[in-house]
Image 1: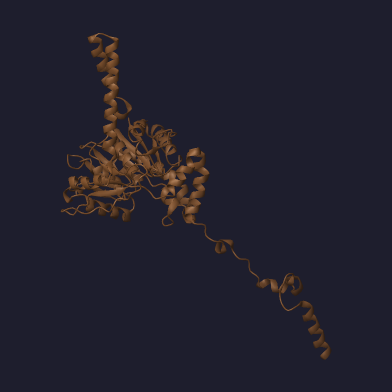
Image 2 (image 1 turned 45 degrees about the vertical axis):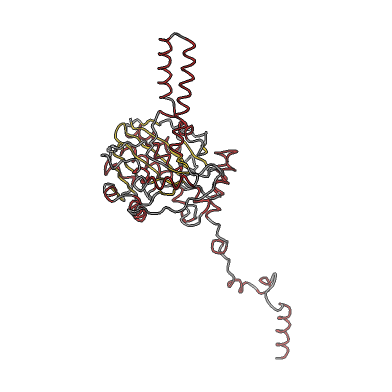
Length: 419
C-alpha cells in the first residue's frame, strides 16, 4: 500500500502544483472540457458612435471636399453658431432693439441692401458708359437695357422674403444669444436655430396666398420661419407633417410658444408617413419643403445620444438615401404643375444630396412622365457670402460648410420646379 501511495505522490510531483504553460498536454484531454473561449463581441470595448461617424467622414468627405475637409472637420467638432429668428408675432420693435444692442445684425436684410447697392452701382456705371457711346436717344435705350439686365441678374432672379429676419453675430464672434423672453402676450421674441437652416425657406420664396406643405416639419424651426412670411394671415395655408408623433408634439409646443392661437389653429399638423403623401393630397401645393432625415453630420460627430452611427442603426443609415428619394418623390407629386419644391439636408454627403436629386428627376420623367427642372441658386452664394461659407463644387443646389469663423451648417438645399 505504501508503495502505491509513493508512486501516486511521485506522479503528482511530476505533474507540478497546478495548470501552467503546456499543462493541458500533461493533464490530458479530460480537463479541456472546462475551458471556454471568450466572445469578442461581449468583451471588446464598444467603439463610440461619434468615433465611428468621424472615421466614416474622414474616409468619404476627405475625397469629396479635398483640402477643405480639415477646416470643415474642425468646424464640426467645435461649438455650433446660432442665429435668432425674429418672431414677427411678438413685440418686434423691442426685441429688435435688444438684439442690435448686442451688435447682432439681420443677415437677410443686410444682404439685400448690399445687393441693391451693387445693382444701382452697376446700372450707374453702364449708364455712364452708354452716354459716352451714343446720342441722347441711344443713351436712353442703352440705359433701359442696362437696368433690365441688372434687375434680372442672378441675385434678383428670385425674390428673397424681407419679412423673414434672422440676427447673427459677425464672423469670428462666438457670442451666444440669451434665451428669448415672453412678451405681454406670452409669445417668445425669437427662436434660436442654425441660421443656415433658413436658406431652404428663403429659396422656397413663399407668397402670402400660397398653399405650402412642410413634409418633414418637426421639430419646427423651418415651419416657424414659413409662418413669418405672413402665409396664414392673407389667404395662404400651411400643412405641417411629420411621421413621428413624439416629434409632432414638439412641433405643437413650438407653435404654442411663438404663434398666436388664431394663426396656429389655421395650420394643419399631421403625422402621416411622408412617403405616402401623394395618396393623401397629391398635386395640390404651390410650394413644398422636403427637409429629409439624414446623417445629421454635426450631431453624429458630437453626440452619442440618438446617433445614427450606432452599430444597431447600421441598416437604417444605409437605407437613408432610399428614404430620402421616396420623400422627395412624394414632395414632387404633392406639388401642382408649376409648383416648386425645395429639398434639404444637414449632411455633407453627395449620396444624400445631389445624387438623391438626380435620381428623383430621372424617376419623375421615366415613371411619372413629369418634367422637373433644377433651379439655379448660385445667387445665394453672392447674397450671403458674408455670413456663410459655401462649397463651390456642388453639381446641383448649394451647400453651406461649417467653418470656424462662421460655424453654421452643414446645410444642403436644392430647388426643383415641376413643369
